[in-house]
Amino acid sequence: MNKFNSVKWNHYLNYIVVAAVTVIFAILSLTGFIDSSDKYLLEKIAIAITLAVSLSMVVGFLGELSLGHAGFMCIGAYLGGKTAVILEPMLGEWPALIVSLLVGGAVAAIFGMIIGLPALRLRGDYLAIVTLAFGEIVRSIFMNSSKESFGGSLGLDTPRFNKDILFVVAFIMVLATLAVTQNLIRSKHGRAITAIRDNEIAARATGIDVTKYKLLVFTVSSFFAGIAGVLYSYSNFTVQSTKFSYNYSIEILVMVVLGGMGNINGAIIAAALITFLDVELQTILTGNLAVLQDLIYALILIVLVIYNNAPALKNFREKYNLKAFIRKFKPHNPSKHKDDEAKWDRVPTKIKMDEILSVDFQANSPYTPDKPEKEGK
Image (cartoon, rainbow, N blue to C red):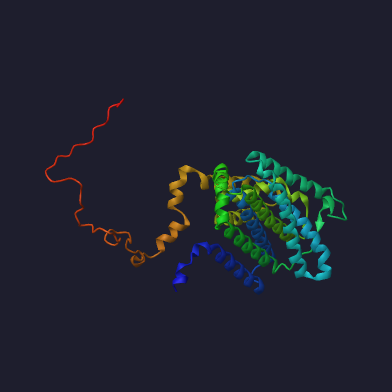
């Protein structure tokens, strides 16, 4: 029972919520209570969460600005999708999906390691330019490929996985992303990564291998971006390079910033919210109103970012938030508050606190302070 009470449940809350959502919607899907459009929305939300959490490792915890996350996703989508096209007729649906996820993630991780090498020398805007150029180069290569290889400008046709199950697979990948990311950040390696973010010079001075940790973060982040790309190829059953422009990298970055730098739970909520808004605006604004979609979407993002970061709204955010709302309905239990174990009457000492301490002064002898010596003596 003591072990059960000692578990830090706040560390596992996001796992529990994601798993509960997955189970609930899986049951609803099997019983026919949600339609195909809702399943597609769940797939997009799961993919967005995977991208946001993986990018949060680079931007939020390592402190490097990367604008090439869509490029890693593009590599995973094309190579994982091509692997699925080749293997599915031979192996079947499930083996082809597993191999495609591994191939897409592994190749993206290799390129992440390659891009991580410039990160050893570059920081800030310079690294952002390099990663942005990488994403555009990758997109251009696939766009100008032959039709037989990756479909060229028309895109690559990929197999469509069972729509009743694919969103479940996508949320399982979300759980895997959370497990790797949170266990890494909460370990001694995570403390080294955040030390690099806070002060790289001080981290080097204390013996932290900055090269190793930067490459590690870029590699792991790129791996999960590649997995998100494979899921995207299965979800849309076609992959076009126009999807993976720098605008999409910025959209993923907005999810991370909106959720809070280095806040994994915030990245999850922001990714789900932004994806939901995007899909709903596409559904509502049709016909002539479609031109207002990007405008309204941008305005909503601006309002959310200002609310989340404006110093003038700090008191309002602290007073009206989910934690404060839950605290109102949480009963106060005085038995949980223990007495202070560091009280003087509980701390063992060699001398009793009511005992008169001996001094070096003798009775009836005046105290004369030491006189300072004169200079030159």
